[in-house]
Length: 245
Image (tube, rainbow, N blue to C red; front, side):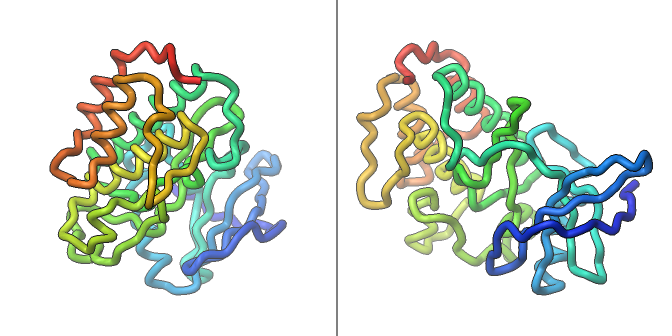
């Protein structure tokens, strides 16, 4: 059951084309202060689109998915758990073992998400938080959609360097495979600490041959050449990662 809360607003964090993100807090039944993220939408339609996704995920929980605590329909607000950590775009990786652990968690989270028929459609380092407890959390489902609602997912969305080429070419797309491309480019960033360029991607920075093969498959400009997430995970678990720095 979703509890009703009336959170305090502490400070604005960011703004997008759809919502304002605010850091806030509330007090639970034991009078303990709980930090939360308040997502206030400009329009009711965007509010309901994202509320549907978070409500669905509450029924299908996964450790790597950010949780919805509550919502307020009158205010067009969704209240999300606060994650104490950093997004991968601003995080300084400690060692190769940590990179391996993060990649494994990302694989598991998106295998789970895709098994539910949910496509993220804007996967990038900034939309994955690595918490201080060592768990990744996928955030920002503003452009996500379900495979049962493909006709409503016609808008081309994504971030330069991470958006699949077939979307830029405005070709008919399988959003699952478009997600795979974005995940592959996110792995490229984790391994190399370099943001991928749309014009030129230096794959020579990846020293492990098997890992290079995986990422080349995930980022193949022809979507028919991409592996599924399950196939990628099976190959990934056989790599020893001696050459990841």
